Amino acid sequence: MKKVLTVLFVLVFTFVLVACGGKTTEKNYVNPTTLEVQLIPSRDAAVLNLQRQPLEDMLEAELGMPVNVTVATDYNALIEAMKSEQVHVGLLATASYVLAHAEGAAEVILKSLRYDVDDLGNLLTDQPLVDGYKSQLVVGLNSGITSIADLEGKTIAIASFTSTSGFVWPANLLADNDLDPMNDVTWTNAGGHDAAILAVYNGQADAAFTFKDARTLVENDYPDVYDKVIFVANTESIPNDTISVIPNLHPDLIAKVKAAFIAISQTEAGLEIIRAVYNHEGYAVATDDEYDIVRTYLARQEDWEFN
Image (tube, rainbow, N blue to C red; front, side, top):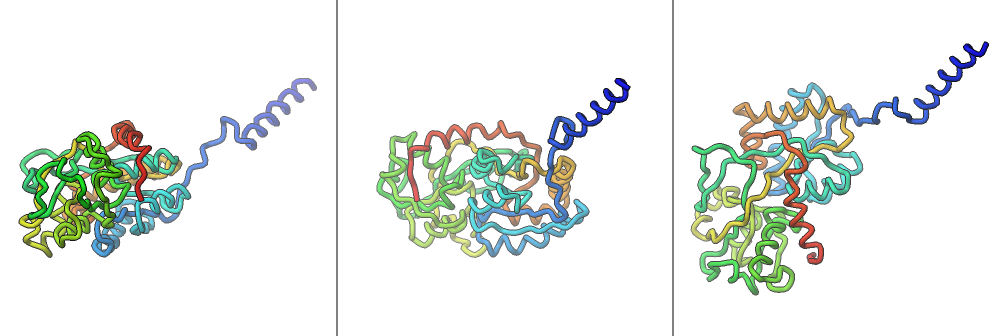
């Protein structure tokens, strides 16, 4: 009788452990029937919207499941959507990824690869792809700005205040050159890297900080942009932007998403799309610690206040 009672006790105890979430319980992964993918608006939303459907179709073909690709209204909206699990995969810029990770909203799985760019805006296609990039300072032809020091008292156009190349690295560069990023310059949020370039081109700003070289985004419509918007200086290298997922997305699906983006980048049609979206040339596996330098820069500017 004692043996029967012992067996019953073990069975009941095991059941209670499972029911109450003991160690035998599998993690509560998110495994959606439709994968929600969202793009950041780092360039004109109309341009991104043209690429949504082709990217969606390719992802569906690779993953074998429905995919919905949308464009976020801004960086913060995408972070919030991932935090609430309304979006499962986000193409997050570097600083936005770090902010999202800090809020438990994102985990990097891939980093983009690009061709490096020289100071004249030429792609170095004869050299290997790189997993980092630089922010550039460009100015109006007649601005009189030839150095970082000359930015004092000037108006600077940026993509957004959470943009890594548009603001985080530039603000730190100004501080390194004895300029107060809050008081010595006027920042204007243009709403995209292409818009920041055009703000300089149209005389609405003295200078702009963008990824290098964002002038390629507008050269088809403004073929003289390289004559009117002049390169002045680079920042230090920045880790490339990310493809990130919500942390509790099912591991099997994460593996499929990784493979899907890499496979798409290795086809001629897929490469055309990812170039059109973000000037990506491919993808490589990434880990969170590669973005620690961004955390250092963000921590440095915690006392700065911008609108």
